[in-house]
Image (cartoon, rainbow, N blue to C red; front, side, top):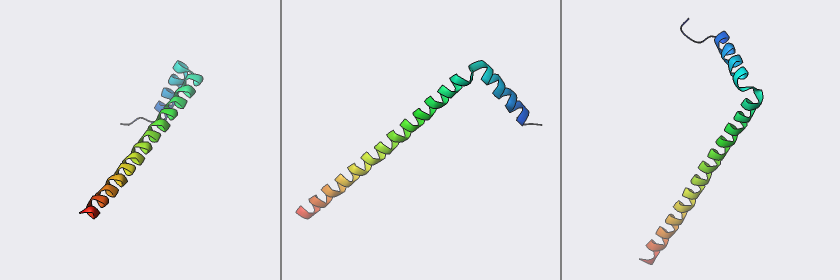
Length: 68
């Protein structure tokens, strides 16, 4: 009653397929997947870089403490 039913979703899907075509939607899906993969890779690189910087700062702190 108050929500979108399965038939409404099917009609919307058919209209989108007619407007854009399957090839364009496939390309769009591939582009979106590539963008997500690139984003995840960048996030992982950022985390790895942060860990490396944290390890360097801990090592330099240890070195400073031992010289005192």
